[in-house]
Length: 99
Image 1 (tube, rainbow, N blue to C red):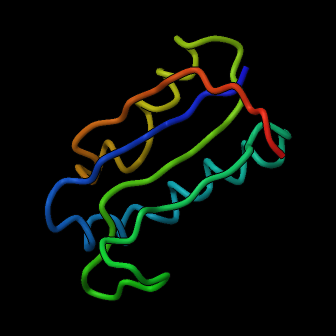
Image 2: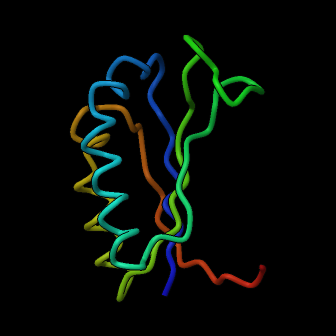
């Protein structure tokens, strides 16, 4: 089943986000290589694909896991969690309907 990982950044997370980004992206590439990643990306803090110093307010990942506990464990081990980028992550079952 797919799960949505809806994260919210702490204030002024940009520097910590940039430092932890390579490890964070590597985990996403692993999911992609396994055919389990549906989508992933950050939420810019302003209405622009490149928010510059305004940074980001969080992220959205939708990926396939066997169950909610496995998905939650994956979320808890995210490098952004360890680096203090995320204030919280909500993990919810996701039913892909379209496209």
